[in-house]
Amino acid sequence: MKPASETPTALLLIDIQKGFEHPTHWGTSRSTPSLEANVAALLRAARQYNKTATEPILIIHVHHHSVSPTSQLHPSARLPGSDTPTIEAADYAAPVGDEPILTKNVNSGFVGTDLEERLRGFGAKQLVVVGLTTDHCVSTTVRMAANLHVLSDAPDGDGIFMVRDATATYSKGGFDAETVHAVHLASLDGEFASVVGTDEVVKVIFH
Image (cartoon, one colour):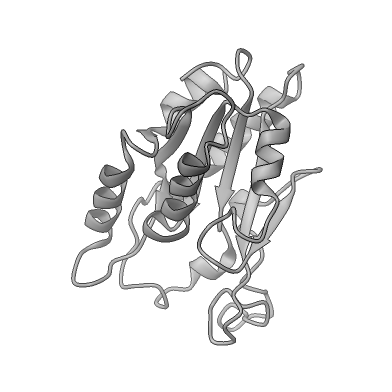
């Protein structure tokens, strides 16, 4: 892990959309109560860094647009009792300025998007990943990033940082949300990515 001032760094935000604010659709509970605050802190730190940086952090948002009409992330879906589209960015992670939104309809942020081309064109050597959900789109995207070797001069998962307290998932299969979250982080750590905390990223990379 190096400061962004020393190595080209990208921040990838996956599926942080209003559809995940539905109170019951995804499960009976969600992990990572500090998700919103930590994602906001990471974005704030990266944007503040970019104000004076000669080599800014590349901030990319990936959003899910399901092809299933019954999905909470279908373009026609709305929040309960509201006209708000569920595919909109959550307020705490809304893009600003020229931050791009790439849209996908599968689990991986690399399928059907130009994410790989953007990272390679930027020459990224560090990739910080946050978002929803740990065991689906975040995990799939992280695994593909490692397998595709999208980071310059970085073998396998070297240089990919998955932020444990800025990713989250839901209870399923009789397992509580924190257990599902922890098991999937453990399966990625050390092979596809390094699992780190928000404070470490802010203090070391985005400082």
